Amino acid sequence: MQTHRADAGRLLIVLAVTAAYFLTELIGGIYTNSLALLSDAIHLLTDLAAILLSLFALWIAARPARAGKTYGYLRAEILGALLNGLFLWVLVAFLIFEALHRISRPEPVNGLPVMLIAAIGLMVNSFLAWFTYQGGREQGHGMALRAVFVHVLSDLAGSMGVMAAGALLYFTHWHLADPLVSLFIAALIIYGSWGLIREGVDILMEAVPANIDLEELRRSLLGVPGTEEVHDLHVWCLSAREFALSAHAVVGDHADSDRILSDMSEVLARFNIHHMTVQIERDSRRKHEPEHF
Image 1: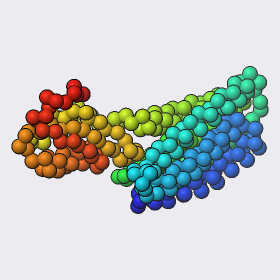
Image 2 (image 1 turned 180 degrees about the vertical axis):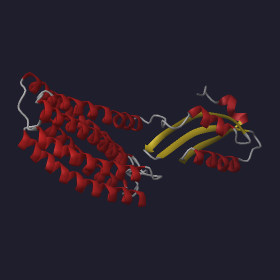
Image 3 (image 1 turned 30 degrees about the horizontal axis):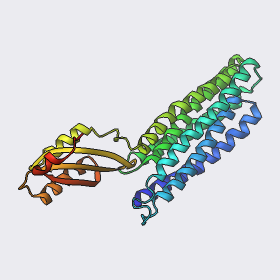
Image 4 (image 1 turned 30 degrees about the vertical axis):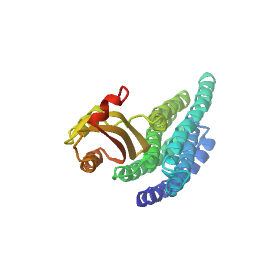
């Protein structure tokens, strides 16, 4: 709960700063007729939606468990991050269409204001990247803050691209620089959101967490004294930072089941797994079990 509040506090600050710069880019893009600035402004608009969605997801995820949802609303954060990524892909289609149109029919753009606004963007996004990174590196922070950090990184690269476009427009009057930078920003959006979408899909599909080696985990469980076999082993994510496990453990006929379960719990804690369901089976029953995996 405390982690969710800390994430929410940082997100509110990012929301306020991003909203202010979005208005600056929007007005500047209209004034200068720069597609690159307008594209970056629309990118910031999706960031605002992403932050609002992340705040909503954190609020939902913090709600307590109840009879119908015994794990609570942990995966609301995952759904929010996944929707953020998909929303960005919708934006990409618009940016590519408009950029291709301007490549075939270049339009005049005032380069000097574009450079000045991009310079402000570099400072704003550098601060936000540091701010969200500092929050995201603290132990326990999840996908909500990481999703916004990815957005900010792509914004920072986008500001660099807009700065380059403004310089080319001002010093060389090469008007193709504006739509080409828009295509560059579209590529940044795809690259930045792909990892979040893939991770969100993996979690919803209950794939093994990327940072857990299943065979190493199996060997660690087999290292518990009295354990002869571990099968039907499954590990999945409840959220980006909470993992669950279920398994069958074959133990000797005279082994202390309570001690084995306690030792296994300590082993799993090293893998950051705190939701454990282990069925103990005596060695004498193994011949009656179906084939395991």
